[in-house]
Image (tube, rainbow, N blue to C red; front, side, top):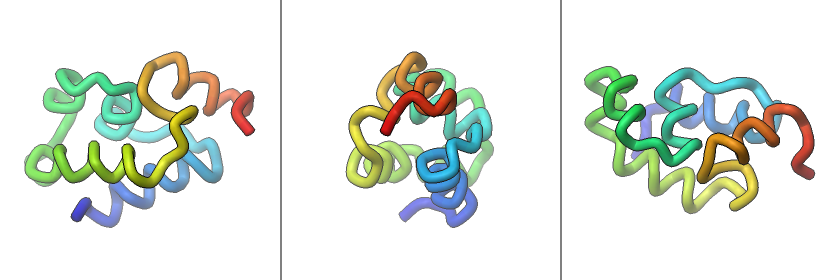
Length: 78
């Protein structure tokens, strides 16, 4: 289970191409070191759940690397 505000940020990123906050951006880019450093206490507690949620709920082409996130935000992904 992930915090509601994290889920909302990730869904807004996917559907509306809204830039996510630093923690969500790092998770989407698969930069878990940065995700740990950017996480507050609540997000750190739910880091593994957040990673699993992204893997299970977002299309493969919108997460996994910095490049994929940038391409999605620019509107180049279908």
